[in-house]
Length: 441
Image (cartoon, rainbow, N blue to C red; front, side, top):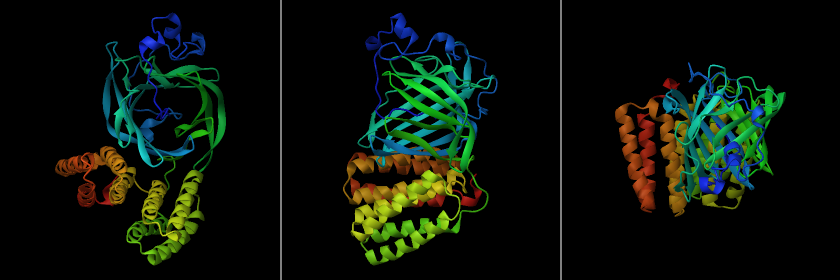
């Protein structure tokens, strides 16, 4: 996964002046600011004998099944989910070689609404370096795809791009994206052997890099063993890894306190919508007690902060007798609980529950007559579908896809009551058709 601007900027080749030698050497707007070519370690493309076994500890995509990143952009809460999808993608490098690549799904939410989705393709070369072979990008506005700016593929728009050397050293320079006029990043390794604070404690062996962007600005980016991209930030904005599995997976069943939190959040969703504030207050007390019990164990710091914020928001909604805010806060708490459950459950099992939760968002937003939110909720369901499709048998998948299409038509047609009905039926059928949780791996 590679952090990306959530406000995409596309510069045409004419504006860049790609015919000039400066632009050919450096893909920034000005054509200046890049490191000397002698510093680059990505000029020659190596061989790819076993490209989908990505074992580089600083970018271990083949072993990074699911991750949650949290942060903010311009003061707005940012949430990112990355998921390794089944299967491979064949990339024609344009030099007579075809390489099999892994696909990682990147979904970013800003202020709780879907903002960007990318399907990223990665392969590892024989020297241990990891290469970025392109991405399909879908930028959202008002819940719908606004454009696909930033889409590129190695061998079509530009060359394959190194995203991590096999043995990065201070001073190494490489370009994770190198298609002037579409995407461009140049990275310089500033430090190696650093220790960073991870979800379960100190992580040794991290590297710190400086990343140059299209507009000539720079930001620091940290990569950590077992996690890959660990944090990115500049000017107060931040995108940081909160949890990754299997790196942060724990043995044993889900703690009872987390189970109680999840049950309470779903119950709170119903009581808030029904404006039963006495029941809501009682449920909230039980949820807070369950959370205190969970906090007695080791909780990843960013996820702990997320859950605590969610419970405070829920408490304010209950005290103020705000049904819409209460229902949405209950969903946020349930989502935070699922993030924590990733340590104990298979990612696909968690994604099935996320599917159910986003179906509930459709109901809440439809009741509030928020067409934009409903449209975005449906888009999220469509992307989660891709994460769970492989555990459904063909007939079940066809039924789910058919129901998703009906839901999409209702949302696009602004028939919100129909959308709510279809979402409820879709969620119920997904629960019926999905394999038992104990069979999911």
